[in-house]
Amino acid sequence: MTSTNEILNSFETAVERYVAELNLLSMDELLEKENEEEWSIGQMYMHLIQSALFMQLRNIDHCLTNNEHTVHSDEVKTELGSQVFEAEQFPPVRVKVPASPQYTPLQPESKEQLAQGLQQVVDRMRSTATVLALEEAATGSKVLHPRLGALNAQEWFHLIEMHYKHHFLQLDRLKMNLVSD
Image 1 (tube, rainbow, N blue to C red):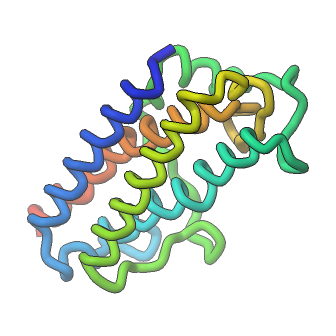
Image 2 (cartoon, helix red, strand yellow):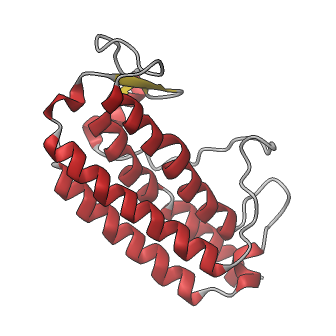
């Protein structure tokens, strides 16, 4: 498995690309949607920020504190979860979830909101990497992921990096739609 520092470095490189792309886009481009079922680029950024802060990093905290949200360490990943972690990436397949108030991210209020959100995730990833590097017991407690199964703190950390890299496919597709208008 890839080391915590390697994952962090790869994640920071991914965020650098997201920041560079953000700087090239206007607010109108960030908010543009092909249709009501599609996300805008801004919504995709909000999804990355919110899922890292409010799901993935929170689940790392649960694993490290071994609280009521954790499952027994004997719990395992699903077949998809095993494949994702063996490949160290998500399959290059588009995941389409129907629009819903619970899942569809809100449009961003500003580019600054997105830049600050990305920086907040980087800061949390850095502080979490320090804890994980010191926490050899990070493999004990696990939290269930809805599609990937039981993940420990290190796996949740790696998941954030893989998730950010996976969304480059969506970013490229959404940017192409901007060009074709």
